[in-house]
Length: 381
Image 1 (cartoon, rainbow, N blue to C red):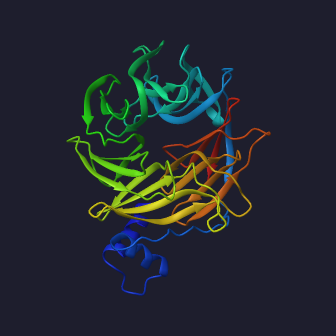
Image 2 (image 1 turned 30 degrees about the horizontal axis):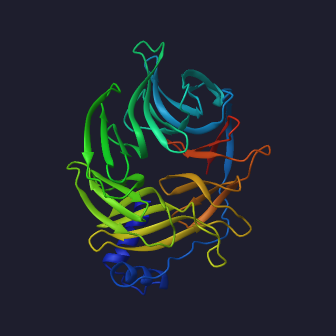
Image 3 (image 1 turned 120 degrees about the vertical axis):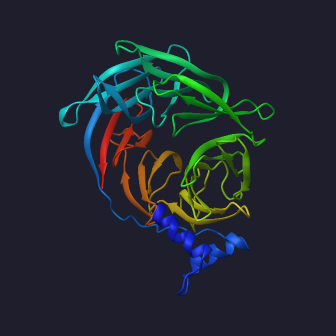
């Protein structure tokens, strides 16, 4: 993805030696002069391959809500494990031979259900979860006793929590409170998983929907707001650096990834509220470029469903230059962000719609889950 950003940034800032295609001329004009519509990606399906390699069943009896992959130290060795979340149980599964899995730990919740798993990079033997009904009410850290024989829970934050994200360097950022008393807080963990220190960032006077770290720009954090603004902070100083409006074409946009190249920001968004149109089809993801100095932005690419497919974005994940989304139709769709193509479609299995999807952090495997507790592991190539 970074190489793709380099090419776009070079065209925008330096200018090519040969004649630009029309779409690149438009992008350059948009960034520094006028506003134009973004360009839809190819609406055909360029086949990629999803190979089922493993399956596990979470027999908790409650509805499955999330899945992820993480490192956990077991008997002195770090293993790539799967963590599954049902409404009232979170379980850790260690790998066995031939792509089989064994459940080794379970954390139980009696009152407030689990909404999502929140991984904290660079921390081993700790995972965070967000709990609540429709909105997040608690964030808890899940870990084990030093002897590994019992599970522990630590309450990290409670209240009206709007957004949360695990960051590099063992950090967790969250936004909580109402518009008048909103707090944006960074919590840093010690290597053993204990809470080490807290820091507050300047609040943007708008409700934060999502956070994203900016790859290629150290100590930068990006957020999207309900007013369709993108804000950026300096994590060292806590200062709010910029507030940039990204247009009103799509409401409640969700930021998944952000990259910095040659002074420009490249941001991958999803649009849960987007409506299907004859011209663009069903837009699911979008790549936009922002010039932070001028706060001008341009939509470079819209990633739409192939012809004949329907549905809106429900939830999804972006890793490197691949994006996966669960659609309201119950299908999972995958895009190559560099090529602009939808490369794979995964229809419902056994008449059960897909509910959530995550990329494995260390390889090209895809974790897909259904509400009944079935978790499927696919190799994507």
